[in-house]
Length: 118
Image 1 (cartoon, rainbow, N blue to C red):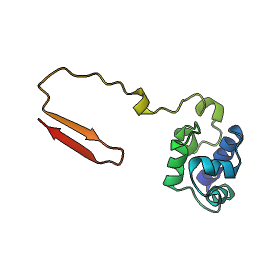
Image 2: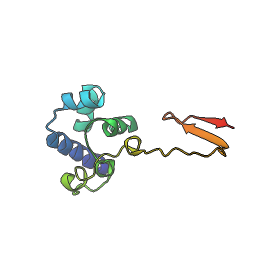
Image 3: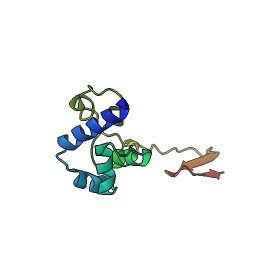
C-alpha cells in the first residue's frame, strides 16, 4: 500500500530530522515503544490516536505533510517552515462593556459546552 509506505518513510525522516530513536519518540508522544516499532516495520497501521499524539507532542510537525500521499514533498519546506499553531496561545480577548449580552456559550475541549443566559 503506497500510503502506508509513504507514512513510514515520512516518520523515519521525522525521527532522523529530530535525532530521535523509536524509544525516545514513543516516550515523547506517549505510546508504547512496540507501537512505534510495529508501525515503522509496516506490521501495524497508525491509528488516529497515534497521529493525534504526534500532533499534540512537542515535536514540530505539519500534519498536512505527514498525512499527504506525496512521498517527494520535502520535510524542510513544509514541516519546519510552518510553526505549530495553537489557537489558545493566539487568542486575544477583548472585553465587551455592554450590558446587552443575552447569552454566553463556553465550549470545552471534550466537545461539551455550557450556556449561560441572562
